[in-house]
Image (cartoon, rainbow, N blue to C red; front, side, top):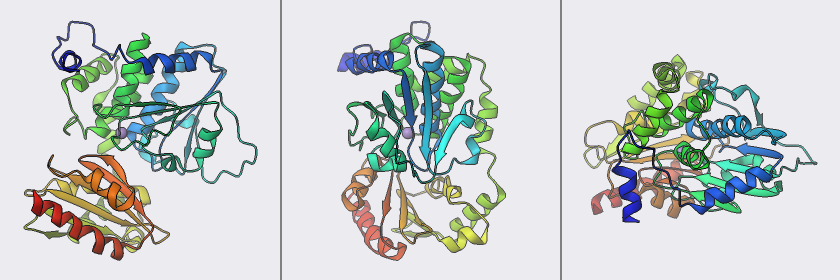
Length: 353
Ligand SMILES: [Mn+2]
């Protein structure tokens, strides 16, 4: 293991890019792809750049490389956020609200990307379960291993990095379209190459993607700098009404449906708010407590220290999950109840550090 890690981090850019060439799961996946005439890929509900980019990178790379594939569909549950409209292939993604199909399609191969649990696939779960072979590719440490083949690499900064590893091992070249999609996965999950998963290997991959001719400035702007004003105002409102405890070590805010309506914002516009909370001095744990239209609660947590594992906390309290320093959960309780349960639990963790 040590030598594998060393080969990850101690390499010279002029040498061939090191890959997890010993991973037999990659070979098993290749066999499944070579045998499949019909493939579908799916992302998690409330899709982000990593899940969509991973899905579309697979679509481009596999359809460009394997002419035997007769049908390749990308299907997600719920609505597609507007900001990803620039990604190549996004218009061909089928977004299903509620599946009324009594006759589900039977794909030879179903692939889930960046999704920690079967429940997070939403309605598409039924498609996934109906596929002849089911593959789960992810980097969430909390992944439940719900596929027949599970390629889970928590060391990866993004699921897109796992996809790139797989393509490298198969010897599949990365095209311009694939590069755009993979670059989106890297910048969204690393917050623009800032978060703790930003390894030398991530920069090496980014460098290779850049070399295909992608416009990294335009991609960054599309993802991070084109917020609708309604979203910016919602964030400002929630920052203004945020609260702190333990001398600012705990910061939280509640996003009510009233606030979303006040600014004519969309549910997806809560995205990014957690970073505003996180990026203040002394903050150890930040929390966004969002009221859903149904009156239940969606949680987003960030930890600024290795000593507090928010995925573990949310897993224990609410069957949530994610990463050690970034996790979420859906809770079938009103926000007031969740606030009263969760905040003291976090305070206890901070006091224990
Ligand atoms: Mn991810």
